[in-house]
Image (cartoon, rainbow, N blue to C red; front, side):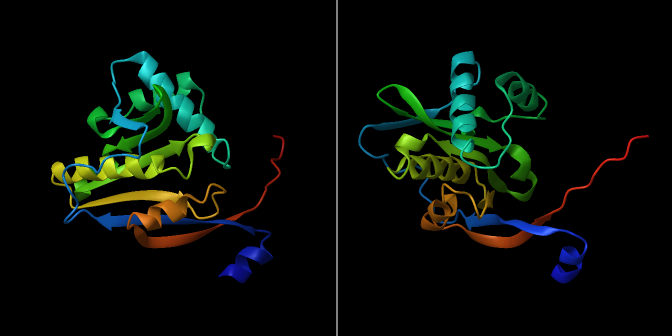
Length: 189
């Protein structure tokens, strides 16, 4: 199959994984975050809070090939979701400044799964336990709601090495997929 793709002009781009973890035995109260870090729920009715979530995610994903939307487009996107559980969205603050954000999605509810849609930590605050603190808080909330598992998707080639964090908290691949790409020239009509 790979040879057929390559023969057709496709080239390997990256590997994507769908990770999952059982929530059996996960404490219903998250462990304390690192010293100096506060993790709290996003205030979904607070425009400033939502702008802070967007800013952190947009800036954190700028290190990847993820195409981020501006605030207005992002706000429209989340406004079009059938339901949003803001009690499953979290920010991490250091000295009152939002430096990390976790956006959940109700996409996995029918499968009894908590779903981490986006997790971002500003570059200066990475590898300091901020991302783990956000994940552990989300895991505790999902478990308290009776969810059996948690899932997320990750680019295995992500330059921030996010996969190492996900493995460290106990997540494992449900599947991995190689992504190939080619460019097609559009013809004028």
